[in-house]
Length: 277
Image 1 (cartoon, one colour):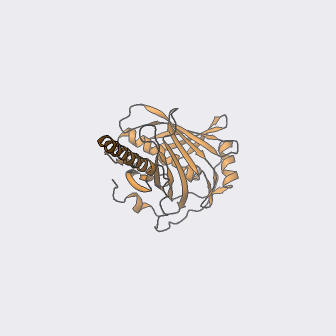
Image 2 (cartoon, helix red, strand yellow):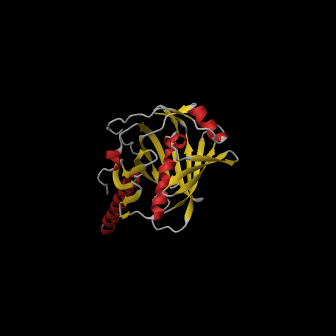
Image 3 (cartoon, one colour):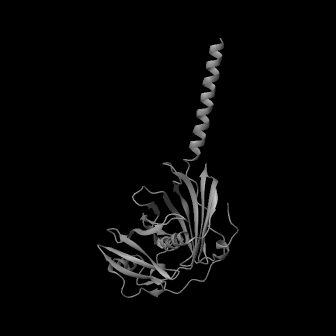
C-alpha cells in the first residue's frame, strides 16, 4: 500500500511539474499583439522634393517605381509591431516593439519580451542628442564610442521603413557598388558611416550590411546584416513587412514584423519620456 501511495504521489508530482513546464513554455510561444498607435499630435508634413540627380541606377529604379519622381522627407515616425528575439541561447522569445524616430536625428526603442502577451522583460534604448544609452533588464549600457557608432547605424538602417529619408536628407549620399548594389553613406559625428544596400529581382531593397560594434565595450566591429522582406503597402507607403537582424554568419537574433508606421508625428515627448526598466 505504501508503495502504491508513494507511486501515486510521485506520478502526481510529475504531472504537476509537466503542467507547470508546459504553462511556462507555452506562454513564450504566444505571439503578442502589437502596441496600439500612439495618441500624439500630428506634425507638419514637409513638401515633396524631386529625387536627387546622380543616384546609382538601382537606387533610382527603386524610388521611381515605388515612390515616384518626387518624394516627401519624413519627420517624426513611429514603427510598431511584434517579433521574435534570441537574447541568449538557441531559443526565440516573443516580443512587441515600438521604434520612435526623429528621422535622421534621434530614436527611442521600446522592446518588451512577453509571456502570454504580458511584458516580462523590457529594453529601453535611445540615441538622442548624439548620446546613446540602453536600459536593459539587468543593467544599463552608457554612452561609449562603440555604443554611439552602433546606435548611429541603427538610426539610418531603420529608415528602411521610411526610406525617402535616404534621398532627401542633405548629408546622405549614394555610391554605385556594382553587381546591383549601392553604398549608403551617412553622417556620424565628424566622420561618415557606410552600409551596403542590396536589391532583389523586383527592384526592392533586400538588405543592408555594415560593420558595427556589437556592444558598448567592443573593440572590433562585426558584420551586421539586416534583411528586408515582404514589401507591400503599409499605412499608405511601400515598406517591408519583416526585418531580420543578424551578426556575421549567425542565424538572425531578431525578427521584427511591422504592423503600423505612423508618419508626421510629434515625437519629442516620446523620445524624452521617463526611462523604462
